[in-house]
Amino acid sequence: MLKNAHPDDLIRAVKTVAGGGAYVDPALGSELVSREAMLGLTRLTDRERDILTKMAAGVPNREIAATLYLSTETIRTHVRSAMRKLDADTRTQAVALAIREKLIEV
Image 1 (tube, rainbow, N blue to C red):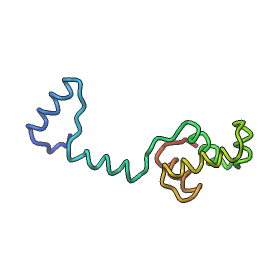
Image 2 (image 1 turned 180 degrees about the vertical axis):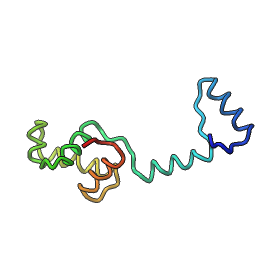
Image 3 (image 1 turned 120 degrees about the horizontal axis):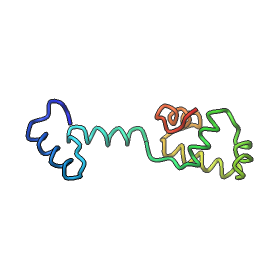
Image 4 (image 1 turned 180 degrees about the horizontal axis):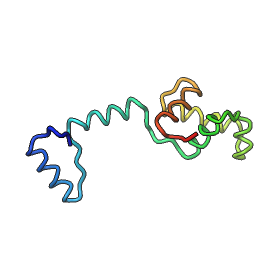
């Protein structure tokens, strides 16, 4: 709800929430959808987050693969998938976006 919402909208929101539903002010709904689309906040898998975290620490693919008992090609596949989900052009950009959006912790 926006603080300058019309009283009728406030009543509708209270009734919706009281009935167990969720209410998002229409003025905010499109902004939330646009932001999510713009930032590419598609959910990363646990494996993708784990690999990005190791990349952020400077661990090379070969070592990540050995640590996780995977092939280096599998690591590269996970990295490409994360890059696509984050709409990142480079590995570095993918790591930076994941950190900035708090998808991984370093």
